[in-house]
Length: 190
Image 1 (tube, helix red, strand yellow):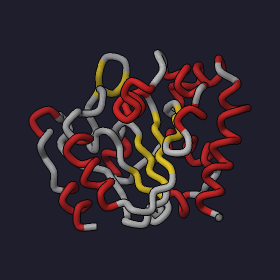
Image 2 (cartoon, helix red, strand yellow; image 1 turned 135 degrees about the vertical axis):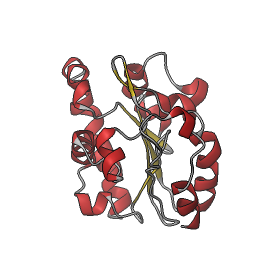
Image 3 (cartoon, one colour; image 1 turned 120 degrees about the vertical axis):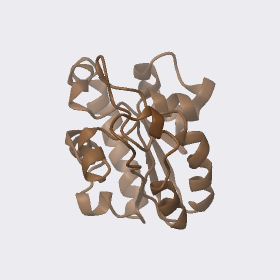
Image 4 (cartoon, one colour; image 1 turned 45 degrees about the vertical axis):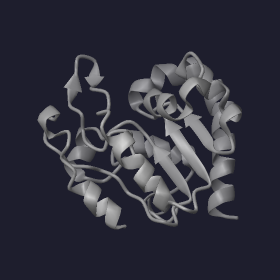
């Protein structure tokens, strides 16, 4: 896609990014599933490969897909809220930059004509796309994932930093992940 090449040259956030720009985004006009996460972390910033870290490993397990399928742009478009690594904050990475989604997401979605499902990973993506439809907390939103189907499937971030959340919310692995896998398999293997 020509638009991806244009995005890869984007530097509107450069003054705010201590580690420089390296927009990480993938898409194809035939992408069936769109993954909207937060922003690349340090590993992804370095490699330029989306979800090329422990969070990506867990996400692929949740989806029950292998790396070849995951990185096949005809299957998955990966469009984060912020395309570049935002830098370190006091308790982890800074929030995604706010310039990317309003500037680039509508242009990308205009070219994605085969999308059957959008995964909204984490509160930033959920609040942006669900607006007033998201619940008070991420936990409540994810617990009520059925409210957003068939367009959106809401998920917590798969980061290992969320292991405590996972342990406290066993229903996620028992109830939500089986439904997620079912949705993904129905789209990829009709």
